[in-house]
Amino acid sequence: MGDLSLGHFIVLGGILFALGLFCVLTRRNAIGILMGIELVLNSANINYVAFARYNQTGYDGQVFAIFVIMLAAAEAAIGLAIVLGIYQSFETIDVEATDRLRR
Amino acid sequence: MSITVAVFYLLAAVTVGSALGVAFANSIVYSAFALMGTLLGVAAMFVLLGADFLGVVQLLVYVGGILVLTLFAVMLTHRISDVNVSNRAVGRLPAFVLVAVVFGWMVHVAGRASWVMKAPGAPAPTTYGIGEALLTQYALPFEVASIVLLAALIGAVVVSRKEVKG
Image 1 (tube, rainbow over the protein chains, first blue to last red):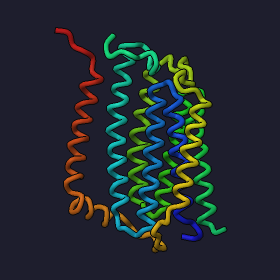
Image 2: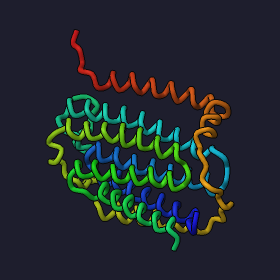
Image 3: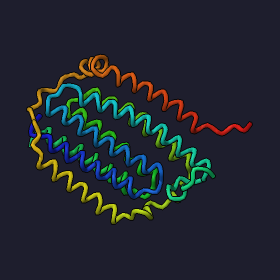
Image 4: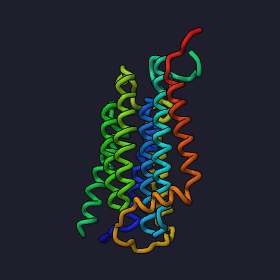
């Protein structure tokens, strides 16, 4: 595997996590916030797989990453359905304008 | 510098550059397309880490499913470019400071920790092991996952259908 070490992947995961957190904090568009969450989940997945690779712990890390991907798919389906529902009611998906549950 | 490290830095540049696009792009459409670069880069990272099956799953589920769904939502909610990017509650500067502190703290902790590391062996096919793990050790979470997916499917239909009066 050459000179690659665990640290390379941990730092990459950290950078992705930081950018995802920034995206979640600063976006006003609900879909933008969901994209930030996807970035955070991907960074966690990189860490899972990297630790599994460099600790020789079998397939536990990869199986967990599969579960994370599955939950991300469910989250995206539900989240985007809710966003579309909000858009039908409010005509906007600005998260600061949608401060009520009913019209 | 070996070829593996060079490939890693190339892929990391693509991944982080696209993630910067996701976080900073002014248009949400550009963000969605930049997200594709990030997801592809992460899939390549999985392959680089010897997780071939996971790389393909990432391609199929993320790039083929979640990203297309996101693009649909972006296109369906028009006037989307009117939404200002920055948040009034948390401005860009406080968010940047907060994120920088969190990132520095994470790197600090990761640098101090003494990871138990073993030299990884040559990459081998992982499908056999993952399949066996899913049907023995992780059989119960696997079944729960299918129920979660079913519930999400029904929930998405119920949430997004039009209300029928009467």
